[in-house]
Length: 416
Image 1 (cartoon, one colour):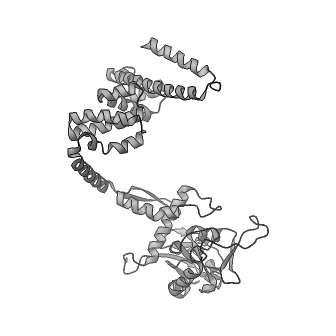
Image 2 (spheres, rainbow, N blue to C red):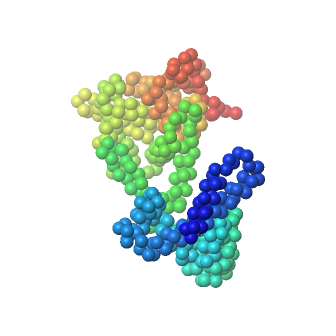
Image 3 (cartoon, rainbow, N blue to C red):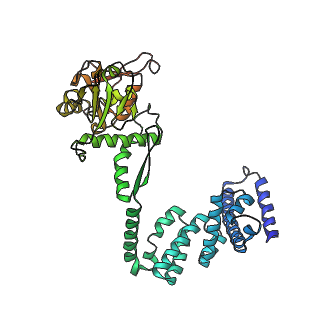
């Protein structure tokens, strides 16, 4: 065996030294096909060697704790990769002869072998040996046409081809088992970090996953050419927008006889002068910019305290853009008014052009609809906003972006 492998290695080395630029295109394609077949055949040889070495206990005899660890040192693989190699070698060794022959002949690749072996094992347990033998031939034939991912999807209906009399019952049983498994495994873990942030981890069942994707996917697309957020940041902001929308509906269960709400406490002088910080009802701190931004939102109640700590305002409706005023604002702006943004009204907050802490009133002439991203952008950025002569919002870019600072408008929501 070693002589044959050394000859193969020399032949491969000779191929590598041959300039490919001089070859005809059809010869290049044929050479690629041949190289792929050889790669799969070598994979079959490699797996056979790994299986035999593992069975002989070579790794432990040479002082390694396992074959995977020995492969890490011998082949410079990660332990995880070595473990997967050992597992695949065992799977291939136990697989039907047709599966091993398909890999050795170069008809399938290693990823497809894993799929075929898993699928055949499932068929064997469901429909018996005869159906499993038929499944090998069908799956190998499919593997010559489809990659491993599509092969796995097709394999879910393999019984339609090899045991149609039990296919429907087996598919229903598999679906019920899947639903039971996903219901059992569903969970969300919320871990509070030392700085007040939360870490979310978990697994959603199929139904909840579909609902989450339907809710946040429309909000994860970039809002325009100025949106430099990463995909992960956009998903974060989309989830926050969905939560704000839920708060805005007023339909969440009450807690302690009060509707679900976020309370931010701050001193009036600090808020008016944009100094100091605010405190959430959970005890966590917010910057004054964040407090002023949250104070714009009708779904979040600003609790403003005077110098002696007495409550001056706890979310009075006249200071919040809600009810008829919000409906009028929606009719005027029709969505986020920031230039280039297509977010609909339901994802938007009402923003005071002149903040109420600075003496601004709560009126249609002092309000504009902004999505969560552009609401934050406006509070933290250098943009300015005012109403034009026709009563519609105009945004003035910072000088570094447009030296002439020409006002811009949103054209996505105009009436046709």
